[in-house]
Image 1 (cartoon, rainbow, N blue to C red):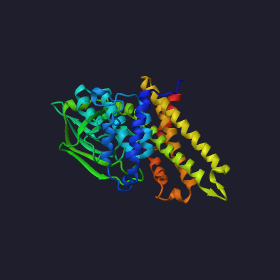
Image 2 (spheres, one colour):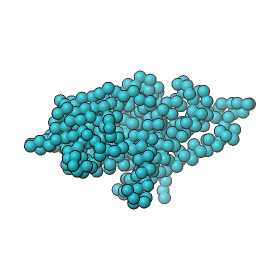
Image 3 (cartoon, rainbow, N blue to C red):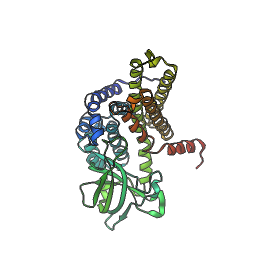
Image 4 (cartoon, one colour):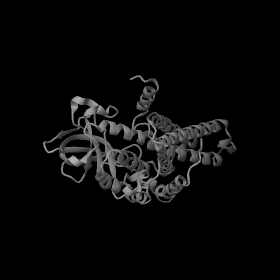
Length: 382
């Protein structure tokens, strides 16, 4: 196996690192404290191809591959996880499904605006009563005689919901068919019948705006159906497979930031007349942190490579997301512990890494769901 990156992959990694270190990292504390949406930073990412890394150039994207996306996500997440969450939704959850299932007109209208960073996209699957069990959704789209649909219902925990211009929505069009009765739609949030709820006050990734959205007799035109009627669940699951590579990359970025801060700290901090990095218990933690970080990175790059090769990657994406998210949480925990009181203080970013890491074990499929996916794929049992 060749573990070397191409010149193009290294180039986009360098661009992402530069933006992350020069613009995102210096403002991360401010956005975490205020919860403001970092629109200017996201536009900068868009202008440099980061909001549509795998989007072909004819639709306004960078035209790169899944490995490039993973490398860029890691760099942005290492500076601030909230920025990488917005970037992940635009790349993985919004653009990905439209590129695969959308019409040419849909790609030009929706993907280009998002990939160029002019607008923000969102993905609406979760509902107040249905998270992991997506088929239990109550949001309904009733088909009309002219082929349009009228949507009524609520969606919750919509990342970028407060600021999104366009949303990929999943709604039930035929409840009797269960998963095969779900259809995907393109939503313009400026249209009558769309309403945003309050922005959620979150533990972490606070600059990534999240809210509940509601549809009241919102009319969807026939040309705004994404894919075929009844294909929504298949589209959602395929999109989430790709999304898990993005979240795994995000988790790696958080973990790397926590790990690097800890390595620097144990060299400098002294106790009992010696750097604490000379203590065997500290050394054991450092070794375990490094092993978990590298294992998560290799699993994630494998999943990204399979995606780029056009091979099935569902299992590998779930393994990457599971291992990387749990590694991020564990590494951030150990980083806080090693830093002691300073790790608990808001004077250092360690407590932010700890808060941000937790969500990676929850969204785009909890760790429990990832274990179900992996076990079912391995055994063939349902």
